Length: 159
Image 1: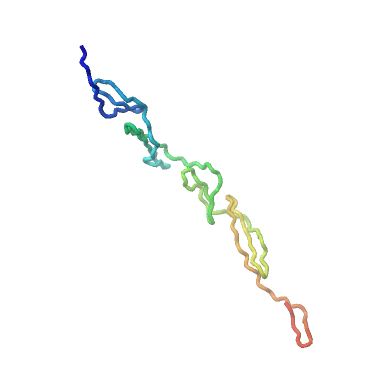
Image 2 (image 1 turned 90 degrees about the horizontal axis):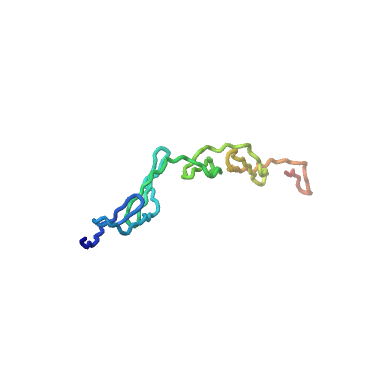
């Protein structure tokens, strides 16, 4: 006759897909698929080296690791970003690509300067949407005297 056996399950056992507890007789209990938490980047990939990420089963603490491929820059948004001196495109990783100084077209006067008010002019970068604006100084007053004027006591010329 077989002897009665009381199961004694040890620590979690695991493979790539499941976890379980096993008695020394070979009986398994609590067999289940891993329940993973979110991926954590353990090494960021660069443009020259692969990276890695891992996640852990919340039940048995099995760690799954994956290799992340070498980063290839890509520009999802074709729009140019810019500041006062340069324009660039941005990779999805945040790195600036194709950085260059602005390339300007001709100046266009947007407001003529007068003797009483400053004017302004602008020019557009031919690559991005940046518009450079400049103040045109007020014109210096030039006296332009006409004919002599007079009254009963004085005479003068007016500008």
